[in-house]
Length: 269
Ligand SMILES: [Zn+2]
Ligand SMILES: [Zn+2]
Image (cartoon, rainbow, N blue to C red; front, top):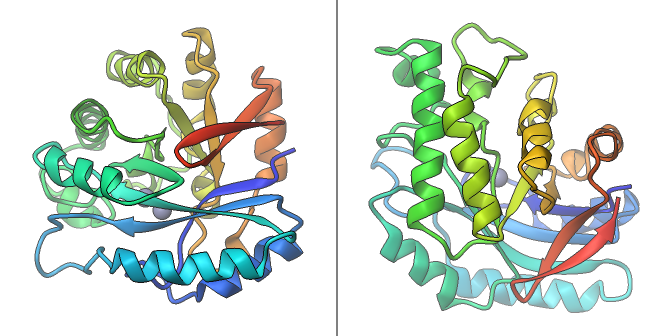
């Protein structure tokens, strides 16, 4: 059973209006044992878009107080979801090592400075297959240039935004070469692969990444995973953890990790 939500947002993220306390109250009432805040920080985001940065000192101050207040009720971690881009490894490394985070997610939100979320722009001059392949290539680049992370976030995120609104896809064999490189990179570097249930929230038939990718990860020797809802409001905390836990055990996963002080604590599935 999954009882830890290691990917969730609050009003420190430009795309959430939820107070941190409300996320905690929701996690406690959902019966979670652990939760880790991972607000968005995307350095060098294109001008004109939302500002996905925040004051990290205020973030720590706010969350440290809440952590103390809720001690004994839920184990709270302070993490960050860093939006990686291959040309800014220095900025990413400075952020990851410059603060006492419990947990760092390496997420790809931009490809050549465009968010696939902006479907009409991202897929304007490329087919869906080209767009997905390019996204995977960018994920691979980011996992290699920025190495001070704990888990590789939502590695097939771009699939949510296909112009056809497809709900499912076949990762293999079409993208097998680049996906294998991503999975081997995660395994070789001793990192975790994130299971992100926001895919189901977005109406897809799967949580990120696709079950075929998870199966392949196991085949290649991958065992380390983290679990998160990517909640942007209280109703989304811990969402779809029941079906996702069943899927993971069926695929042969036996435990998942929660990070504290950048070190994994393993919990049984
Ligand atoms: Zn993300
Ligand atoms: Zn997120």
